Length: 111
Image (cartoon, rainbow, N blue to C red; front, top):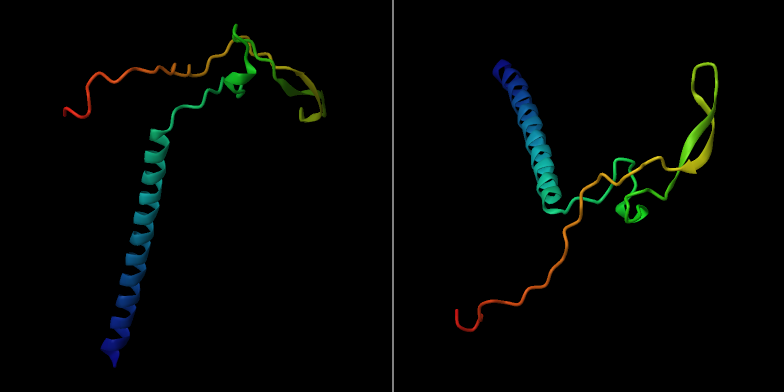
């Protein structure tokens, strides 16, 4: 009887350890899957001002409006905001690659 009580505690501890290791392994696999998926995507053309390339003109100036604090309280926390044009002077995000069409060089029927 005494051995069964001691063995039960050991089994419970072993199962708890096994469960925690399994959960760590599942979390690792999920992070790995997400990283592989993110690596296959093209970078989003987002500027340092957090606006998309579509919001910038050919010269790179941003045409989006942003909310800027207009009044503060004693603790320097903003009380009100106003809309102003984005102060971004030039697009600095990743440049999208140009898309080209190329004729097939080899005949697939010969290969």
